View 1: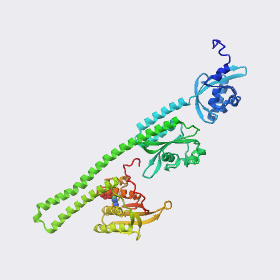
View 2: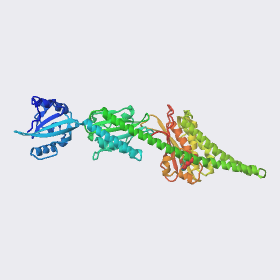
View 3: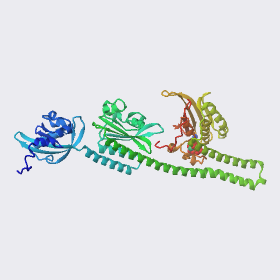
View 4: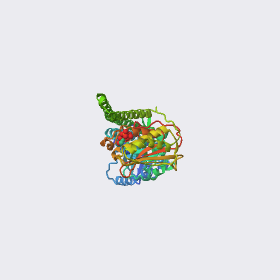
Length: 552
Ligand code: ADP
């Protein structure tokens, strides 16, 4: 056999060479007992030479799930069976003494001694390389997922799945804020196949609650190293119960605004690492930019549609009364001498009604723009909703009687609240005049209002409803009802005039009073609007929230 070294003085002590090696050297016999363990092995696996020698290597550094396989392979190799193990570079999983798992690259050779075969393994940590490859894979999968997704929901699902699959995280969640409801909603959740989530999988969390809530509120990343030991987050126990061990959450930003949190859950102990946080923050930034871009696109479409609706409204609602006014004025001037006083009254009536329509529309447009820009101030004072509602009904009685409508009112003698009575009157006028306008002759309008104490809130609420037996609002129109210029098909089909501005004004006024308006389920034909208003003084009037708001 050719000697490997030319000058044997250099290798006077092979043991010293192994000791000085940068790779971990582990020697075992065919019974899996450790015979050799150099300094690099001590550093790599966490056991000293004395702790390792004589113990089964499977128990020391091989993950439990691979131990059986390892022992069987060892027996086969010791029996002289050729395998893929000897002489090849292998990438394997190893376990450190502290329990964390990491990838190693290893070569294995075998020598024969009078006591039997001895296996020599040289190994080194390839965590950094594996992670870098995974990171590249994740980034590519995320970019591909975002590029190919047809909607924000699809994009969120692709991103969470890419993170879960490429990084081996069993659960990945993307949470986004719902500004209208002031909470976080889980918009995508990846769970590895077969992982039962049981009580862990909630879909909504208040700000500040759970890992997503904490990340959102504190606006920075959070790391939970041991979910079983964590008593600060609501879902930690549920997470630990389904085998999750660590959790990391990073904020999702777009243009300086926080949109939500991206959270990953792992089932192995892992160290908080800057590189990992960097990767997650990078992915979160990608997602944030994507959502922002989509939102801008959606807003542009919305704007174009609003413009179309505005044009349609203007053409119809502006031109019709103008045509009527011009035509009637022409008749008046052409035939002034021949007209009798009743004819005159008739024509002047047409001009008056149509001028009024134009005035109402101009006022609605102005009111809306003042409310939305914050230029219409709300002046809250101690007032009485009963008084406001009765006055509005009083003024509209003639119109109701003209259409032979029955108006029933169930409302206590006084309903005190702290609000702006003029603006509430505007709400009452809009809803009552709609009820009259959209209810055919012979129908009924029912107005009710009363206070209600919320068990879990400090103050009282007024619940006020306006119901009619009219033409109703088809289910397909309901989601868009409170949008500017939107008119339901039931109104358009019957050519009932309107601008689609009243309900937007109503909703904006109520929001400025911290109240809400909803379209309630209605038995039989007709429509019911339900308003909820706090009776307590307004601390401050909040700026209006409208479809322009990002991520409703
Ligand atoms: P307008 O009545 O001037 O069109 P609104 O903003 O008040 O505008 O209402 C928007 C749309 O909602 C109406 O065009 C109509 O389609 C529908 N709507 C409102 N109130 C009623 C109601 N009481 N019954 C049926 N439809 C209604």
